[in-house]
Each structure stands twice: as structure tokens, then as C-alpha cells.
Image (cartoon, rainbow, N blue to C red; front, top):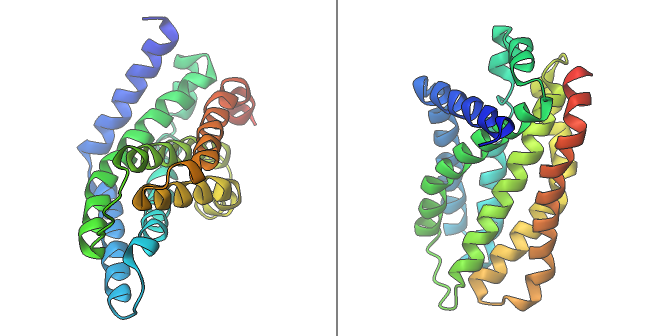
Length: 226
């Protein structure tokens, strides 16, 4: 294994161990996500709408807000503990830090979704007989990938700025609009079994994810130094 990816792996493991050693934030994010699911399911019981049509929007609103809570902490621990500079010295290549943080955030987001997505599916009572499961899973995967990549990059940008917790969601939302539109439409296409009409959006998700995964390889040095 090249030294670059070995360093990524060790920082990734360190972050996951720290996250699971003190689960307060993780549990708080999970509780927040499940509460959003219950609020959506309760509200939709009061109106006559097709649950299959509203499920994609409810899903991505829940995932988006969970991601904002989870991802803004990507660099918070290092900033608060004063260990960010030490990590930068160890990693040398600044992009190592991005990829380790990105993979840790992506893993945590997927673990949260393992609970929230099935719960929302059951409570909203999705009944689509033509569900394309592969497109649905791919949409959730690519949407989560993009959220983790953009969230990690913005967390690195705002980590050393005053008011980081306020700046993070303000910066994240406009950048993530194309991703959220694509994820909602691809999820809806998956539920209706209509793959071809949303293929363009699916490719947009893939390009968006690759763009925000490759760009930090070049830009992250300037991000952490700035």
C-alpha cells in the first residue's frame, strides 16, 4: 500500500475510533434524524398525498440535515484540541487529511442512513410495485458521497474561522443544490421504476461526486494553509 493511502487509512481509523468511543454526538444526530422521520410521517398522515411521491423529498431533507450535523464536526475535534497542526505535520500532503476525513464522514453518514432510510420507508408506507432497488441504493450512495465530500471540504475551509458552525450550513446549501435535486429525482425515478428519464440526473450525481472528490487533491493545501 502506498504511503499516501496508508496514512489516509490510519487517520480514517483514528477518526472512527474517536467517534465510537464517545457516541454522544453520533446518537444526537441519529435521534435528530429519526425525529425528522416521525415528524414527516405524522404530517403526511394528515393530508391526502401519494406517499411514493413525497418519500424522496422527505428522505433527502432528513439526510441533508443529518449530514449538516454530522459533517460540521469533521475538523472540530482537532481545532478544539489544538491537534490540527500536528496532523498536518504528520500527513505532509494536506490532501491525505481530506480523504481520511471524507471517508470517515461518508462511513458515519451511511451508518446513520441504515437506520433512518428503512424507518422512513416503513412509516411512510412506500408501496411502489415497480421499485428499482439498484437505482434507489445507487442514488442514496451517490447522494451521500457528495454530501460527505462537500461537507468535508467546507469543514476544512471553515475550521479555523470564527463562527464556523454558522458558516458551514450557509456555504453548504447553495453548493449542494444540484446534488439534492439530482438525488431527489433519481430516488423518485427508482420508486416509480422509471430509470431512463432520470439517467441524466444520475450521471450528474456521479460527475458532481467525482469533481468534489478530485478537486481537493489540488486545492486542499491552500484550504488548510489559508
